[in-house]
Image (cartoon, rainbow, N blue to C red; front, side, top):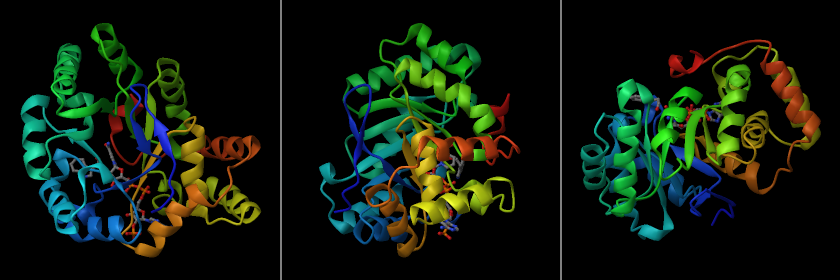
Length: 283
Ligand SMILES: NC(=O)C1=CN([C@@H]2O[C@H](COP(=O)(O)OP(=O)(O)OC[C@H]3O[C@@H](n4cnc5c(N)ncnc54)[C@H](OP(=O)(O)O)[C@@H]3O)[C@@H](O)[C@H]2O)C=CC1
Ligand SMILES: O=CCc1c[nH]c2ccccc12
């Protein structure tokens, strides 16, 4: 086992702090081998899927072929349509399970502005019916969350958003809003400054901290995403076992960044802005 700690959501559900993403281009359609490797060799037992990744069947096959007991894996998937009921029923079939652990609306843009509340009420019904343990959203801005909260009987447990130093200028107020409502952040794209926009102002700061902590730069960025979101969940991925082990070790062996180190990365990040996914999050 990986000894990863859990984050406790506002409904009491425990989620492994690090999740294995299946949305990266390489794994679309055919996620079976990578999920098998991540689960069995790197002990990544929290798998992040989505209807839009078009690979839920191969994720389900991976878990079946490994003989994974349902309670031994945390499965998130995301609704990719304006009809969460139809989408979840399809996803459950493809994944080969009766219930997911966490079900998210992938983006508010899938739903008409006037129907954000209505689609959330369907999510609440799906949770009540036991088709998902927990319900949340992804790529929701403050204004989207406010619409949902107007009618919500159940507060979203998470908002899955892009978090890395080069979007922190915009993400900061959303993170604080979510914190004030008890909505946990799930960070995606955490390695973006290192792998998608190298050579920027964040790199020397992260390199220094890595040396101070005896960590890799990737580990510093994963910890930073966790800490800047007040103990949030972090989603990453790799096709390489060694990198997955390094990612796990960030949360089992590497000590926390100091408050000064967290702040130094945030300040360096604010010197540039690079959003990788979901441009509406800058509106
Ligand atoms: N809700 C949403 O809208 C979105 C959700 N997501 C979810 O989040 C998951 C993670 O997001 P993602 O952006 O992929 O996460 P990261 O920013 O952590 O990037 C992961 C990528 O970085 C590479 N990598 C990993 N470690 C290193 C390293 N040390 N040095 C160089 N390259 C490295 C991996 O490739 P390699 O195989 O070469 O190691 C992998 O392709 C997705 O798979 C998806 O499930 C992602 C985007 C949007
Ligand atoms: O989840 C966000 C990024 C992503 C990766 N693959 C796809 C496919 C369709 C929509 C979004 C995405």
